[in-house]
Image (cartoon, rainbow, N blue to C red; front, side):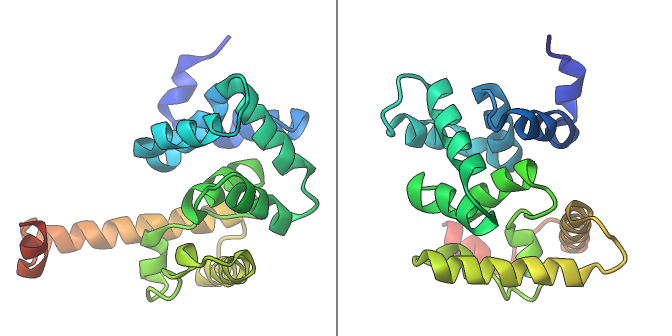
Length: 190
């Protein structure tokens, strides 16, 4: 039976319960899989569901199972990412979030906030169309995340730290500007 209190802190639920279940079985329920999707980008859940249904499985549950079994059967991190990007059509931000929950010691979430902290150096990674170029760029991003926070030994904590730093800097900037957008941003929205 599901403890609904756990879902209030979705990230904690993912990195305790969901990671453990995947390690034990090599797959997850659609519920747990979509908890990952919602954690990364709630707005994407319908698009992800459509992408999974297009693979020809009888149910969403069967699609999730097929996807995760193919990830768990992959031989190494490169092959795991390739399964999600090439065979299932995910983009790097969502694929890296899924793999971060499944393999938190090998992957970190590719996030534009973190890219901004790393001098916008890796914003191009998600747009690479050749998988090998994307993989090489993601490895560089991963190394930069590891190097950016040398005092924290756990990769997931490095990612959280960088996201939190970006969040704080953006909020401080917004407060200083009175939450007014720069004129060029307002023109783009018009």
